[in-house]
Image (cartoon, rainbow, N blue to C red; front, side, top):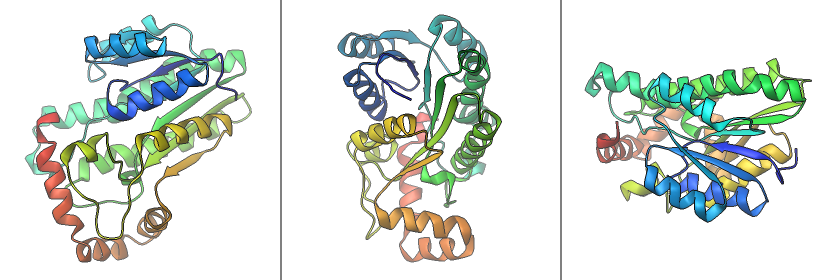
Length: 263
């Protein structure tokens, strides 16, 4: 599907990765409809990329409903918004669990359910879900985040089969460790030894590639991390031992502590 001339709804637009995605669409001649909770930042970004801002809280079903109503007709949806949701499950309050599930999993499903019918009627469109390699490999201090990203991957791949032949594509884009912006970069942590990072621009390129080539799954990560994610997904016990040897448990503990205030 050609991106030029399309109207694109992008959630989580004010985060560093979201901003890169918004700018990438604008450079391709798309018309972004940007959403997030930070109204002033959202308005500035919308003015920069020639888009439209719709402030919304995706943890609230009413906020999702209002977003759908105000966004209007769109050709592409990029569900990018997410909460870090890191830390041992027993440290979360029930309210924090519900919020993580709502933003990371329930809102993308609700947006797809609400906006896909018009795309099917038109015989064209694309739904992109920005997940994580944490949706393929589980880690300590990440059980809730893993649950949302494993769930998002399963939903995206299943929905792709549901919509096969309608002209509407569905993709899951899964970054590894992202430098300069995003949940990982904001903590100041370093990846495990031997694991490299990718840039926000590479994630944006992955989103565009998924749409233009109608790819089911795009893993935005260096080769060594892509290989590790395949092995880790297929052999959980192997992955667990490898992560302990690489001190990944300690890394995830530090990441979850740094992101605690964002629950």
